Image (cartoon, rainbow, N blue to C red; front, side, top):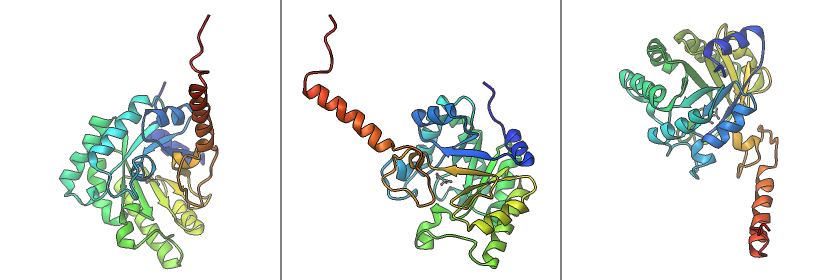
Length: 263
Ligand code: KIV
């Protein structure tokens, strides 16, 4: 099956089509997302709090991200796989950062990397893109900055803050990013940012309907998260469906009903 490419994502933005992105963390989630026809799979560092039991994304390491991205890439047939760069890697010296991104492409099968940061990252993004590595930017709420921020909050509340977001997005686009995640950006500001981008596709999360695409965390979508943000939509009651299935198995074992003797 033909894999979705950066060119396909840019063409979708150009034609006004909406881009569907979802996170995945292993072969099981990737198989589900891929079969559902998503355009892009993000192997987010949200792997930390969704499946690894950490309280934030901060403890997630490069090795963990390589391991999970490789599992996703092995199961994926069609979607464009984006690997998230974990905490503090964005502040590596430029040459080291380019080599790290190259490792993600070589060792994990990712087709692109995502980096948190706005115009402060533009020079490094340009060097990564020059090396042949497609980049997704990430502005608005940057979860890797949560300790510095003192908690989670929304962005783009004032005109001045919206203007800064537009500057960040344009700098990333100019540096060659093909897509930019807007997290927890007020809908009006997200609309203005999206309209200011000529080429790069904006992907919103908790940022209203006027982005070029949307991304959600797969465990929120499937109803498997212990706690989901208010903006997320649950499309299945995964926890209760699976718990019921396991409960049925447990009681059949205890009652001697499974396995059945075949006559
Ligand atoms: O790590 C992640 O899942 C993300 C999304 C929330 C965009 O960065």
